[in-house]
Amino acid sequence: MDLPQATVNGETRSLSGAAPPTTALDWLRGLGLTGAKEGCAEGECGACSVLLARPGVDSPTEWTAVNACLLPAAALSGQEVVTAEGLGDPDALHPVQQEMAQRGGSQCGYCTPGFVCSMAAEYYRAGRCADGEFDLHALSGNLCRCTGYRPIVEAAQALGAPPAGDHLSLRTTAPPPSATATRLPGYLRPADLAEALAALAEPGAVPLAGSTDLGVEANLRGSRPELLVAIDHLDELRTLSIGSDVIEVGAALSLTEIERRLAGAVPLLEDALPQFASRLIRNGATIGGNLGTASPIGDLPPALLALDASVVLVSAAGERTVPLVDYFTGYRETVLAEGELIARVRIPLPLAPVTAFHKIAKRRFDDISSVAVAFALEITDGVVARAGIGLGGVAATPIRATAAEAALVGQPWTAEVVAAAAEVLASTGTPIDDHRASADYRRATLGTSLEKLFAEVGAS
Image 1 (tube, rainbow, N blue to C red):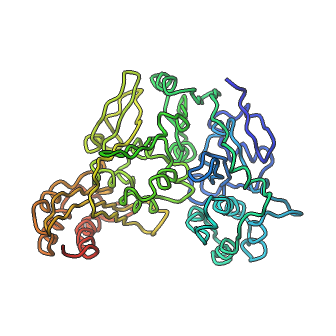
Image 2 (cartoon, rainbow, N blue to C red; image 1 turned 120 degrees about the vertical axis):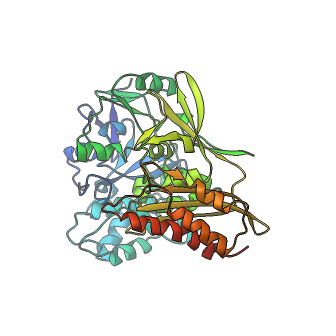
Image 3 (cartoon, rainbow, N blue to C red; image 1 turned 45 degrees about the horizontal axis):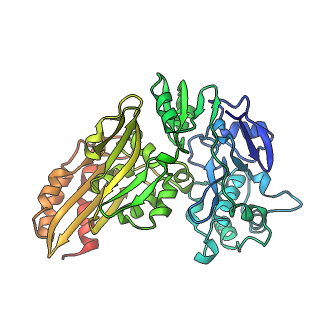
């Protein structure tokens, strides 16, 4: 395997001594690049964001903003990194830095380098200028506690196209760096899926994709797996296909990649994904990782349950397909066997034409669900022909609301039927009282979510 090294702001740097639990943030700061800061250590504030050159959806390479506090430094092996220091300097500010300075986008300055990196990722996004505006959701994972957001928003909206000859813009037209096989103490980036499966069969080995969950466990809870097996680069886990009867999504695709590559082909996911954490998190988090953690409050499982999805599991013994409704077996427990991975998610076609995703949380974006409800209905000639309702936050696992579905299927889509089914839905699951919501509140939101859907769709 190649000696581990990374390109940082155009300079090759050795990664020796950067084994887990060293984070990319700590390693970069150890190089003297102290613009990126640790604010929360869990991907909530964006003070640590940096840019990585990753495979693009609309261009060969895309400058992608990620949380350096969550990413293991070892994951930078063979990769290209740009920090706020690499964008510009006091004598030659980058356009993003220039606009932030001119419009008063910084006071204490702690969060500013992170904002600048997230803003630069959107600045270089292929098609941004054709869209006609800066997507402010690119900044949804960055928090500022003193400046206020208006001057930051004004700086973002003032950005034009990158100037001719901009080297970072030109970099997006060439292929991204390949993810070469890497081994460091406690970290393995295997050469292929077979090597990954062999490594995961060993005691103490855990798969690593976007590190948006494992990074938090390491930073806040001191988790120290014996071996992190990186799988996010494996071609076999990064496919996406739309066939005549099924859509298959590779487990190692990031949520941002899925959102852009599906391009609205699955309206329920198109509705759910923007409500999933922040752009910074979605740039790293994978669909396989979200299902693999088996959290009862994960945002994607309710949507995928409503869509009647299945998961394809792979091990050294081969593949097997498990309906998602049978995948979760208990609190953070699944049918995954030792050494087995989620390879793909399968969504059957045709899709139900009436869909909605209702996330009840204390904030509209970048928050954890108190309750999540996903609907996928087919209404033909005023009668509910099929219904899928997925729920999160009301039981030890994400669940299907089968009783409420049965109360709808075969019945006319009327206010009376919906009201009766809403009562059934409100009694589904075993909601608890916690710091996010009371059990009574969760029950109430379940019933009103179906009535809200009826109000949105109207009688058919």
